[in-house]
Image 1 (cartoon, rainbow, N blue to C red):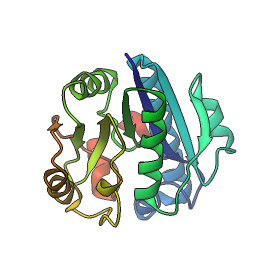
Image 2 (image 1 turned 90 degrees about the vertical axis):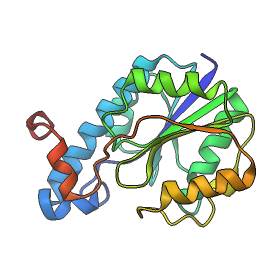
Image 3 (image 1 turned 90 degrees about the horizontal axis):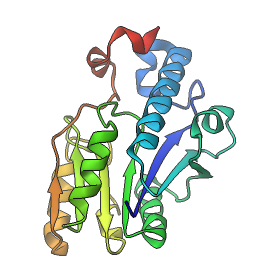
Length: 201
């Protein structure tokens, strides 16, 4: 499929990755879980079989864990002053390379290969596709045709309003979009209950 999938990930370093989970897991435990989520996400992303897979790291692409789990993914550093700009630039580059561009993080383990392929198939008929998160944000965004910077500028990230605000912007831009079934993501200590014991072995 003529699609580019980009994964945004923080290097799984204590004190950098999954900091909101530190009260429950400690800095080392949060980083270890971040690395497991990274490995799982990239395994599913590779299995989805898109034309191009990119892994963009933060603060850079130098951490060994990023290279270890990247496989055949193109490894690079995230660009942009804030999350919205980083997302916009990643999708813009994907659209420069391919007809469809999809973007995910690493904190929604339910985004398996089948769901990724479903999102790409859906995107062939609309301007945008989303997989909402149960906390009010979204775990996947995909665009077709051209970049849409207005979807990401000055967004209230990490709030329950993200998907609702995004719907308002989509309507204002006159874009056609589809939302797939929502998934849980792992951001806060309460979210850990959705993970099985294998994630902490």
